[in-house]
Length: 137
Ligand code: CMX
Image (cartoon, rainbow, N blue to C red):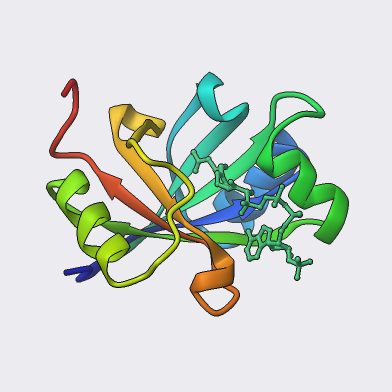
């Protein structure tokens, strides 16, 4: 049911400082920068060919990314699977014993609906389900 990785989330202290590495040094293309206030982050999407990279900078000292940076420093934060029909996918995974971090899909970047799988039930990896088909649902 999870066929395609949409993006990889990378926690950074500063998008302004790190984005030049991806654009100027690695030669990748910046797609968009936006604030996702509900997640307390500013994000930059970078085109990495078959997937995107999502740089995540905390908007304040609160929230998941700020906590991650304080505890682990900069680095890979999550892997996001592109899905359709996110509520059905969530229910299927819950039935199989996967611990979800939300009961309802949350608003994510680009108008997507998102939900996260707890790293404790995913062998140490924070996975995201990302549904762009349900924009405006
Ligand atoms: N990847 C893997 N493991 C992680 C992790 C991550 N990104 N973040 C935390 N963990 C682990 C910690 O190492 C810790 O493990 P130990 O108990 O063995 O030390 C455990 O999870 C609990 O971590 P914590 O630091 O105490 O943090 P919290 O429990 O407060 O929160 C998590 C962890 C994953 C539940 C929380 O970050 C969350 O709800 N995340 C989902 C939302 C999110 O990440 N939003 C930001 C992205 C927004 C976007 O993409 O738009």
